[in-house]
Length: 270
Length: 318
Image (cartoon, rainbow over the protein chains, first blue to last red):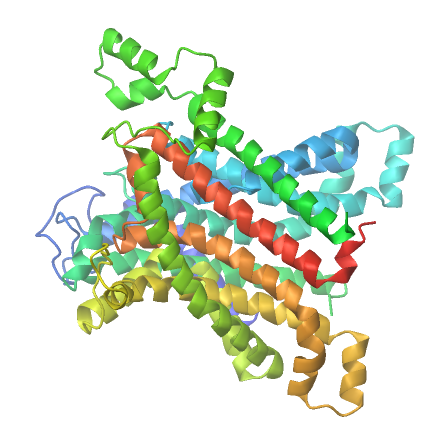
């Protein structure tokens, strides 16, 4: 099997960022909230990326920040996939009013832009990492639901599902043993895109000051902390923004490759 | 009634219903969730008496349904209540800021829509050659890049390094239109970049979809040039999907504006919403949420109606 260059680059950076997230305390040269130098020192051998708006080492904050961002995005993606696909399969298998009620409810939630809805909800909730994961995960579950339902509806008319029904299998058995294995590959390809969306979502919320709260570092928050520097020509805020972009592009490249591979295994889409 | 009018009326009724349901959702989202508004406003150190007073003042002791109906009834009459933080009339502040946001979104749309359609056509014309590949690459990058990165990169180079445009987009009523346009040059540029790639790609897909049909093959076989095939046969059939794409992206623009306004400190709706979410000023958040939802649902409704008008096949529901 030959892996295309674009996918290799994507895999490399994705792996790099995830490893950095996992081993953050071992790699980071300084502590996450440790003030070690002057305000906005330029890059030097002591501080590879310089220092931030209150004199913390930017590289260390970037590494810890990546950890927070990736953790939140991963958990929210997992939550949105589990909620979205289980409800979608349930709707597709049961049909009737359950399907109607769930689908119309999803339509309703999607009629409000998710960023606006998240802001509305966060105005009355305490902003903690758990709340962020739950709000983002549940809002995004609507998109997973739409895809998973479309896939599952095609599968439920297959003969093997009919056979399972006639054997008298329970709904849960049909969902997990017949539908899930067959719906997995389109869902996994979608997972990469949802993960990117979550990274952008949590970064945007933190950038607006309504996501991860300081002194906890995360990439969107680091942009916010250093944004005043831009006007004085200090590019510290661009570093985390570039990290977000490269992570998102890398995951996208990998997801594209997986999508192409899984579809070509099935004979391709032309 | 004419069948087309009937379909359009149905779409409008459906959208109204959807907006009503959205208002319920916004209300429920800000009131029934575990957070206590009074506690959030006054903080942990509040005395029980002041909490009770504030709850009474906000009407938090009434049942939720009563509060919802009172809120909705007032909102329908244009009364959005007063802000908790500064006691000012919300409808008044909101109206001015909505105007500013629309000004920004309008110019972004004026630039991005024709550009996106032109580039989309270009991508179809040079399919699988370098202009097409470049456009696909840019699209991949642009859906992965956060809006604030584009914002700060443009600000860093064009405002700080080159000094072509101001880095903060402050506008007020005393400025002339040219001064205003100069002030919003950078945010408009960012918004254009944000929606351009998406719109381009969807335009390309819509036209390619048409290009694969049998009548296009006939036109090609009878020897028409590629551009006249696009102009005479493909474009009329692709208008409805393209208008759809444009409307969906305008809806996206309205949301993207939130982040861009914060980046450029622009006095619009988005900034207003974000400020008051941080201050936990619930009436303002509800009002902003309602206005954003209304604009979003409205644009989607227009997209549907235009498709119905442009495509006779949609006029006969099965």
